[in-house]
Image (cartoon, rainbow, N blue to C red; front, side):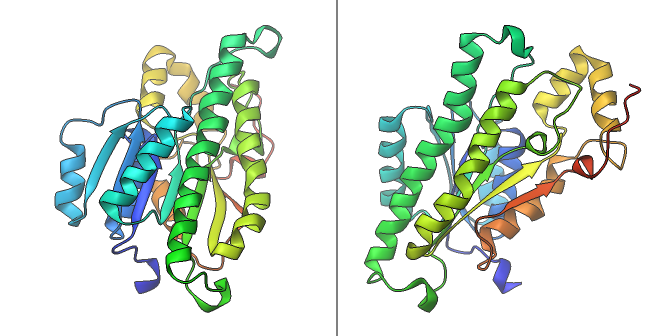
Length: 272
């Protein structure tokens, strides 16, 4: 469908080397977007080449610390030069540590908020400024007369709606709540430039990180499974339609889209 097409657009995805971030990259590439991945890790061998070949799009990865304003600003300027514009920004980079609130360390507090919140803030800010520059090249038209200039998507978490009893992650949940707190004010500030701002709150998803948890603590996955109405966690591919919707829906801004398999709609079973 044409309205779901991102052909010729450029999507910047943090944390896109693996896991959910890479699933989002696949979804946007399939819709025709050129893909730029910002990550401190390296993609799986051949994965980027596979995306480029399968969907006939340009794909590039940058080794970037998203908590560094200078690195972020420099790479976004390079993306503008190489790709022409930034049209979609998905902020999926994140860290989580299972640690009780009463003994949460300074290291956990600092790293969690630096990556999850500050990193998302800095990349979104740089991408938004790039989108404004594009808007200015169009003659600074009223948003009511043109298609939206850009889409910024923050990745939050269902745990900001329904905290889990499976793990003790108050620091992580607080950082994801802070991300959701950006959505409505930024949607209001940036609408004048035709920029939409939304967040996506997934439930537990069977990423590479989840598989590692499963191998080390096999009972944890069973517990996460019981939190969903379908008795299992999500597969990364099941989040793809949600991110594509937020990237393309011209009439959606200032919203948080919960895609959690029903985790947030009922009282969780207590017998694990």
